[in-house]
Length: 446
Image (cartoon, rainbow, N blue to C red):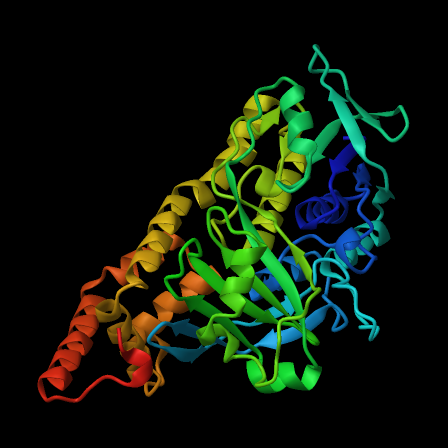
């Protein structure tokens, strides 16, 4: 393999490059990464529109490639999650042995205070270049696939420039315009279905983030019209606010932020600023069709990703799996289907259907007092126990919000006999309290 062209310098593309360069032996291929985005710029220009939650499995994947994420990339170490509903909330710590971090994919929002640090994507791209990859900061305009599969793919970029590639890895992401180029290439590629999220970076003083968020990701299921889920992810001097829904807009995000249940998590005199950094990223909700042809494969969420969670982790998995296929010489369409597409689909495709079912159930149940409150009480009771295995509801919420387990196993746990028994016990306790005339707290009135 002489030359591999990677279109896209995000996590899936750079990890593919790193795997190729570090595992090819004495004769690594020439690896060229095309990406015009200046990840080293603050503000929208260098932003990659992501909440930036990094799991310990992502760090383990990078460490296996000899890459250690420096402290300058990490914004915060997450120690817990707080789950808030219309009838109260509960806090629960991380699963023992796991670690979560927050980071900016780009350099972060425009900040006159001069926040110092390094973006996650820029760090990965620099690591790939340090390992031998070439970065060309220009946009690829088209691909010419040869009629004879033995010949190279012609990659056109910049001002009518052309380069020949033995293999092309497309790591463009669903938020770029390049899926349109793939459709025009004529090998049958159809991009995943998407919906829009809405995200904002809200400035706070570092002490305020420390005092009011305490290294905790806050997740909200409030039954608000058009908003299925909201989250606040702490950084150093900002918090990243994310709302999910089929057609959410900035007005929905502000409606969420100004809701009394949400705004009370901010300092007492806090007001929503007139201007703040916000974006409307697309979120993939299905799997792309025909993501490969001879000598070409699509990686990252432009092919497949974990439904609503662990976008970085699934990007690394698809990029690594693509690199393994390339190093094994499996680059025909039939070979790529067997050695690249099949393992990625087995990992995510069916499991994502379970994920969709879980989130629909969660969204539906979050609207009903008689289902929410027993679950909150379960978590409160489980907090008294030391053994993680004795915390079924805490496990369900933890894995659902972090994506740290297959959705199928989360659903299986949520439907287990022990879980149903614990839930029924709390439900009966609620009824007994009502019969004794003990009213619910003010927060818990339906």
